[in-house]
Length: 312
Image 1 (tube, one colour):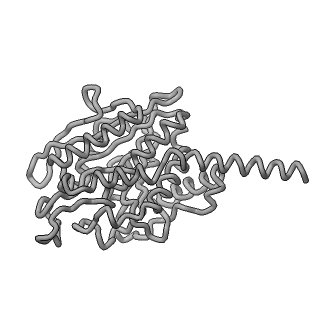
Image 2: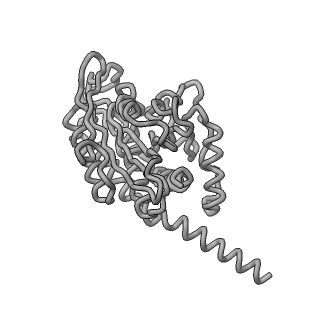
Image 3: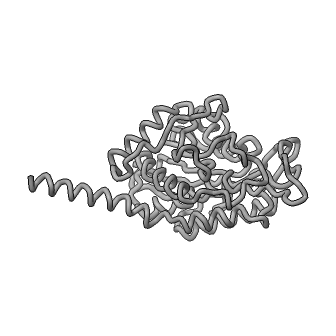
């Protein structure tokens, strides 16, 4: 009986310690700070090619630098510039990229990503709607300041753990709202043979049923991988946090930045927390005040824990 009790206590303390590690690294306050900055009016909706988007890129680059990641853009910078050709206009665009080298295998790559651009102001994008004299800025707090905030916390988490076998690349994409131009640009210049997985983060701030779901051609197998890893390695989580895509008719497997990779990479998927039919989606009402930061914090921690398996 004593040996069983000792095992239980040891196992429980170990599990608690593992969960507490992510609690100490990933914080609500840091998530709030990032979402607040990215969704403020002064950035004018972060349209690709705009001054506001440039300010957002600089903010993300500064965060990567403060975490201690290696620049992975052009000319030893975090910024990787390209041209976003959309709606018969050529827009200057920038992906923000950083790396965390692996222990012993730098020929393989795991990509964590989220897009930081949004749809700007007024008629900047052809499908903008419902702006008015009181508000004409599409701040995109959920879409996708929440995804970028989570990406920055994941970078902090994996840097602190410092046990990744594969090199991890963290990318904040531009041009997603212009038909995924930033992710397509990166895919076209990257050898798919070296990519182990692409984990993209999208709309994590207004939950559906308190869970995250997977958008992918391999929805169910990936969901199972994530849940099984959590249950095996973090039993204190005590739930199946990842669920099937509840919106099959929305064709989400082709609508976010994992998609350019998914045609060539087995494990390329997006993790989402919000409905694509959310009442604030592509609306001027997608504001900081509408974000459920308790859920965003929980989701970010569970994503960090579950996706460790791809880095090893």
